[in-house]
Length: 343
Image (tube, rainbow, N blue to C red; front, side):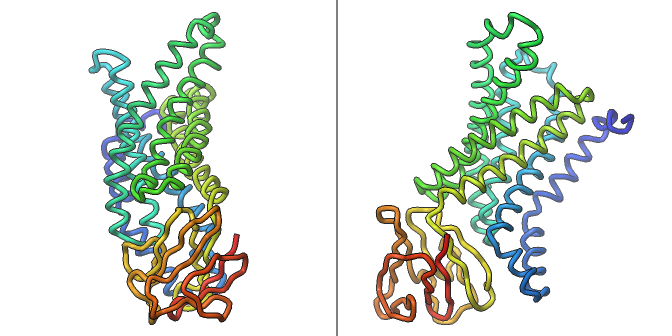
């Protein structure tokens, strides 16, 4: 415990080390690819290609973001006296936390699909949206506390146990909304925006409650913030993944070749398939697959698959077609790659 209470003395060094290790996103990609390419047991490959892996990775990205935010929080708290008012301190703190979480979650889609270009785009979008969301989130917390203050200030107990944690959790919920929105804004897709709003709000509020109550139940504030920020990031990432699964239009699973076992959510109203890094479902190392070969478009809640090359029809359930509404367990062939449509 003495060691934990002295954590603030090493925070600048620790913060640099955490960011150096966690923000080296290329290392995460290379490690995942090495494991997939060198370990040939089907069970291991399926784990790293599955939706469960996506959910795990989103949760871990949230956890890493929380650890980095904790280190930054300790530095910010040490300079609190330099701010002219607590309101300014809250807005600045919220903006910085939002920026950091936005960087991590904004890069998630690129990390999961091993596309560096999407990582860079996601970091830019996530940082800007997160910065705004963090500042607005902490302003929201202050506004809610001001509105409800008259009721909760009737006793110190109700203020500490209910008023302060709930108002701040609502602020964290607003931050969560903006963090979740970043991928939807990058993809410019209303479905992903909806997923981001719901997943971010639920995860942000629940994670925010845990974060705030850690400060009540753990006497050492540095340790409380460590546990709180870690749980906040973990819950935010996991909640987003659950909502994403619930609101998706289905899953495409690769049945053959290098990406065998890989699963892709159909979580946008329009998705492109092909070998290009600009596609939403990237099918690399398959013959006869064009850079942008086909598209999935949602029509009345059904997924419709259409080839973008009339001279290269799709094969669905062993029948050639240019366009078809997908049904459960349809087997699709695009070039040499085969996919299964499932829920």
